[in-house]
Length: 444
Image 1 (cartoon, one colour):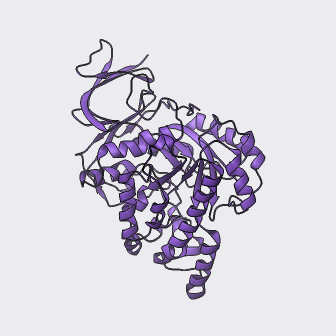
Image 2: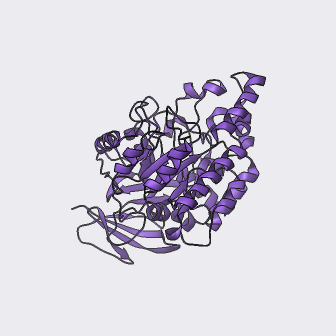
Image 3: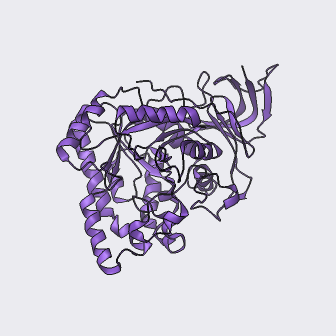
């Protein structure tokens, strides 16, 4: 059994930062305390750096199967552990799509062979796979994903009768991409009439507008209230939507929850001039005022979870005209350094980052013994130095696509170590050749 003693840490956990030590024995946190010792443990002096639970990213697109020229489970989970992420939940819009139990289990088999971080997957809902959703074991995966706006192939769920049946047919969390398709099509037609296919990227938030977001998310929330379903709204992007969510009850009692992604909290529409298609996401990055209101909702607990929506595309694909340019970008390696910048600037306390990216995903998805620094829990850990500046460049990017929307940014914080089930998967810039990831399990 491997034993590792982490000394002189500033441990960030459950709303507090405390100085102390942590002993790993095998895949578990064995002891927490001060002045710990062990005769045979390998000792790592953390020299006062921050020790966090490993981050849990509930929304990534790792592109396997079928789109592996962009990324795959191995490459993108490797980048994730370099960013302090120890568990991920991957989305169903691959090729083929993950819309049957058979395809879901095939993905688990792929991850078992290649993942660097702990893994689960979402089963995609469609207009015609209700029976598959009904057959899904509630402990089998993290939940159901519904696209209530444009998506790949037939994954747009636009049959309201089917949608209500899905909401009534599962006790699992339904995670939803909410944008109104008819509004988007109408807006797109207007701009195509003026510009053809080569619409300037700055009009992306006008096409995928506030109205499109609010119509869809408010409709989904109304349906969740009427059916009693557990609804989690992914990647919110507008100030207007913030009024749809509550902060007067604890997360464990909420049936309707909210999420924001790092790109909507970092960029604004002003950045299209310099970043162009590199910040083209769905939903679109919107105004600085929207961004400010998103931050307010993160801090007052209307937004429960922070995530990445990591979605790599090649630079060649990103250079296509607007109508052929895919939306999405790679983010898992850089989300924690970006959030640490906001922490160091006084925008968000570090315990709140841990709450939104470690504790709350564990609560919402009923993860078994992960997301906290607790004795007996799995030793999924990230060590971060707040004072080791570095600049994002092509030679230190680990995504298969080879680029980042953060290229050129200098971050003050650096991930030093990432432990996955007690094993140092990433340490001081180097990856372990041993993969110790596991399928996530759920206490449901």
